[in-house]
Image (cartoon, rainbow, N blue to C red; front, side, top):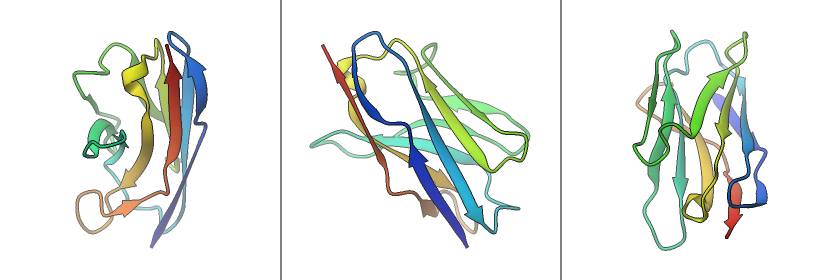
Amino acid sequence: QVQLVESGGGLVQAGASLRLSCAASGHTSNMYPMGWFRQAPGKEREFVASISYVGNTNFADSVKGRFTISRDNAKTTVYLQMNSLKPEDTAVYYCAATVFRSYDYWGQGTQVTVSS
């Protein structure tokens, strides 16, 4: 199995940057693609970004040009660099991994709050 632990969330002002980390442990040899999702209060969870085993990336239109996704050389930690943050980026951010099915393993989430 795979365990995912997110970190790096916090309270920032609009225009600031944050970097979220997702550290994976356990059977990490096959857990791609990995992705970041978010859920704002009263809204459904939505896709933010993903990265494949070979490094291909995808982003939601709402974060293109502001967010980047990357990983370490060991491919066990995935990062979400968030720049030019907006109040509408406020949400709980979740990391997810693909082990048996698409995004079947999830972290506990980290809160990101952007004040105006």
